[in-house]
Every structure is written in C-alpha cells, then in structure tokens.
Length: 553
Image 1 (tube, rainbow, N blue to C red):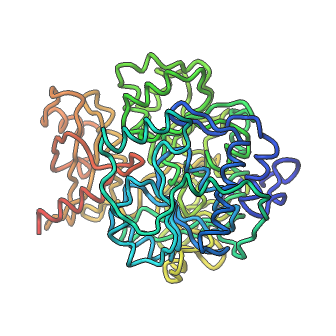
Image 2: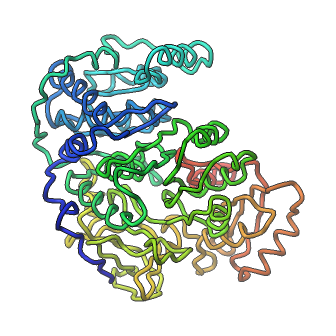
C-alpha cells in the first residue's frame, strides 16, 4: 500500500475555507473579476460577466422555476459559454447538478432522468426533439432551452443561431409546452442573490459510462470536489500559473475530468479556458488554436493528440508558450506521447482517474515523468493493488487497484447494492482496473478487469497486445477483444486501422509473432476504417465484443 503525502492545509491550499462548490465560485468572482474566464467562438466572458449571468439565472431558478433547494437539475449541452453559467447558477441556487451527455439518445436520457429524479433541465435546443419524446415519463417540471449563440454579442448571436437552425439544419423540429428560453431567464434583474444551502452534501450526480449494464450515478459531495480540486492544484501549480494561463478545453465539460479541470480548478486559479464545442471537427479546432495569441496548456486524450499531430495544418498553431499538456480518459500510448512532444515541444503529463473519484487519483509529477505510467497518487490518497482475496499484492505485482481518499464518492445514487460492492467498509474504492505499483509509488494501469482475455487459463491484457501492434509503423490504432473458442475458452481478435493500405495481414501477423508470446498472438486480424469510440474518444472494446457476439449467435 502507498500513501501519498498529506494535502496541504495552509494558506490558499486549505479545503476548509469552502463549504460548497458555490463558495469556490464566489471566491473566483471576488478575486478574479477582471480576468477572462471562458472563451468560445471568439467571444470571452470575464469572471465578472460570469458572476452577473449566473446570479441572474440563479435568481430566476429560485423565483420562477418551481424547483427547491436540493432538487436535481440536468445540464445537457456541449462546450459552449452557457455550460459554466448554468453550473454556477444551479450551485448558487442550491440545486444538485446532473451533467448529461448531449449526444444521448432518448432512451439514455429517459434512464438518467428517471433514475436521478431530475425536476429541471437546461438543454441546448438541438437535443429538444429527444427530450420531447420522453418528457412525460419524467418528473421534469421546468425546461430551459438555449441556442448555441445565446451568450454571444449581437449581431454574432443572431447570425450563429440562424445559421445553425436554417442553414446547417442542426435543430430537428420540437415542441415542448411551457419551455422557457435562456435569454428570458437571464433577463431576470440582477438583484442581490441570497446564499442558499441545498441541505444535502451531494453537489453533483455524474453517470458512469455504463460499460456493464445501465449507467450508475456517482454521488460526488461538495467536499469530494473541493478536495480533488486542491489535490489537482497541488500537483499542477508548478506548471500552471494563476491568473495568467490560457488552457484549451476540447474534452466535454459534462465529463468528470474536464469538469474538474476547467469548471473547478481553472476557475479557482483565475485562468482562461477556451471551449471547443466539437473537438471531432479537427479542421475547426486547428483554426481556433491558430487564432489564439498564446496557448499555455491543453487538456486532451490519446486519440485527439494523434489526430492533431497528423493534421496537415498543425504547423499553423503556435505552441511556443505551452508548458502543460494533460492526458486523461484513456491510456496514453508511448508513440503518441513522443509524437506530441516532437510536434508541440511539450511533454504530456498522463494521469488517472474515475468518475467515482471526482475524478483525479494520480498524476505524473512535472519533474519526474515516467512514460507508460499514470504517476503516483495525488496528495492525501492511498492506493494499493489486491488479489482475488483482497490482499495487498505488494510492489511490482499485478492486482486490482483500490483507492482511498477524500475524493472517493459518497456512493451510487439510489443503488446501495452497487455501492456496497464497490466501496469496502473501511473506505477503499475498487476501481475494476488491473495495475502495477512500482517502488516509487508510480502506477501503471495494465487493463480493465472486465476487458481481461483468458486463453487456456492464461490472462491476456488487451492493452499489452495493442501497445505492440500500435508500435508498427503501418498501424494508426487498434483494439483487441476476446471471442469465444471451444478449445481455449477465448482467442484474440484484433481490429486494426492502417495508416495506409500497404500493410498486409501476413506482415502484421509476423510482427505480432516476433513481439508477443504465442498465446497472445491474435488468431484473427481485421482491417477496418475506424473504431467505435465514446464521445471523449475512448475506444469502445465493449461495442466490438457485442457486435462480434451478435454475429456468432
């Protein structure tokens, strides 16, 4: 077991100065009023602007929404200026926030909204057609709709909104009775905002990816989030300067990692986050970055780094002022880390986290990066790897990673059984990830427990196979899964995206045989144009397995 140094509790690093996340926002408004806070589509909002807009919306929520302190409110939108305003307003109104993936289907929305019991929602109108389908099946009594350009100045606001709706036709027809408009809600007079306590220690309910069955809502308390904010700040303060730095935000803010970095730690520090509404549009992303006077930090993940490095116009972006690149959400491959360093001149600092841990568990230190690891645990955190009996496996031995610290969630929303299965009586959270912890406390994630492939009794970790395959110069990316086999239980099937059409099956099979022991060599290799990915770019082995099992049944 490894215990990280205690979280600093003096000066500005103290968590005791804040009772709720609304207190954090109030601190930022008071200390950074004139600083730019968020930028999107070329328009900036200062912390004073955020204060005014979120106070207006909070006042409307308190007086006109029908919601009361402690009620859940869903926020469903991409990275646009309305997102941080909505989060801050909900917190200031004493509501519990339920961040919602904007690309959810109606079925997924129904599950999340009914499971969490949300009574209000702030939603981009592009997704209202799905809300309309399931609204009657929920307890939602207040709907606030917004258009993409609603926080932009005129005439840009009208131009963007009209283009999105009538030229790009990105807004399917919808009709929701008694829906309120964002602009009308923000017209609420900026009266003095009374501080409201929700009466609950839960600040946010964030839903996990649902890789096994239905997604579960992780209850993150105010102190979970505040503690993790301070933990992240303590390990990043040498690289990120308060009240100065511009950090690019392509990862969706509804995702726990981006939420913590940009809506909590970045706000507390008084930094500027440049919001990217659609990071899949690499052309537009590069154009946005090229227009920035300077970039000091970038928070992304493996697939995005690779796509950017290969973009034909990446040399238009000025990376000379960049000191920090954070990686999270999926494993960072060594080849991509090296390519990013070559293109940008900036080291990637890989970390590890889970929604259930608010999310940051570990980060590579700026002065001692170990490529291939996710660094040591952040301050105030204990980690260990355990065997099937829950016994500590010790140094450099594989086991399931367990975490204990102030950032570990309260539990799963209305799911005591899942909570008991995930958190021990003495507070250890079972991550479901296999890892190795070295003598310095650095953690190497080996694989997801549920992704483990068992071949004739031998354990095979898909990431090991993929790391070897991805090191071939003809491979862009790959995914390995286990498929049923009468003789060995399972065999490996490999899906490969080639960099060009030169690489052959025979060549890749020979390469695998040269670099992998016999039982780890894929029995089937398929070349594909792309791999299924989550909205944050994580390769979904689960979908590949489901597709494969469907063809076998």
